[in-house]
Image (cartoon, rainbow, N blue to C red; front, side):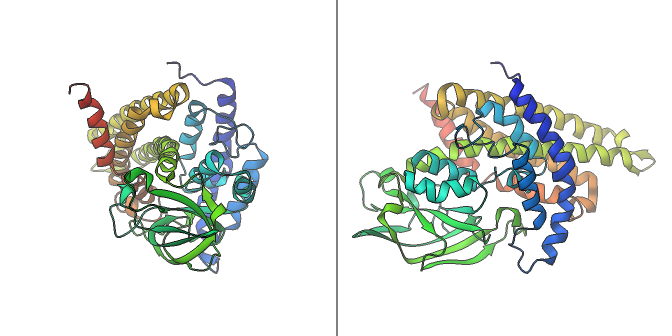
Length: 404
């Protein structure tokens, strides 16, 4: 396994590092200032649009999509170090590059499974950054970690589908630029195969009966960068039958195809978040004195920094191996590694950020430093794209199967 960066990756890394230092990191404070003056906190601050324009001008646009026609044409191994860099500012950088969830996963779904008409109507404006989108799967009344529990109904009536259900934590839905929802529900709730009951369908935001009811908080944060995480009610929502993505009963398979790349993207960015935490930890350690010593001279602080560096290097190698395998043998062939990074990376990064918070004291839990928000984001990723326990269960079964 050769993880050396090729010439194109090196070029993009250099450009992206410069873009982060010159544009993204300075914009973090500007975003907060501009948002405070907006009529609605869900509107996009002007500086974000400026960042998007600059990223597109520099060719740092749609880097996540491996197709050369629609995206940058990068492999997973080429994209991995770039996603890590954006993880240094996880709320702002992915949006600036049009590489933010849930749009990335939705664009992948549309690219792989949509009709040409659906692509023209929804994929093209998403790729251009003209609109945003939402993915409506999670429900409050059932354990959505098991997608076969989904209760939303998608019923065929003539040339239309009628949708009824209640969703929550629907990322992106509060953003007024969110124009399309990909909704997962059951078209065959009584089907014999529990994994062929679900389908996915496109629902435009302005469809009668679709109500974005409220924003859900995440550890007290409203996550404006992602357009919030909303509770959404679908009450007799009617859309043309042509809005179905793929075939009836294909929703579960589409969800799995969507989540594979999404999991590795999250883990790549998490490593960047850990690097930002280590940087902040070191800066704090050399600038503060306690009990007669510089914090950098305190043995416990040195241990935290050393352990964090070792952990990040281990995680990076595991993620790069996973990216390499996904390119070499496909997502199915890399299934064990995808689950491994999804289990290991958030846990370890949470611990690194937590040590940085401890080093900053009261500042670490305040809004004056990014650590609290980084911690909340990393902790949430132990739930997103499937909780740890689901991946542990599947991974253990694969290991045990060898001995049964």
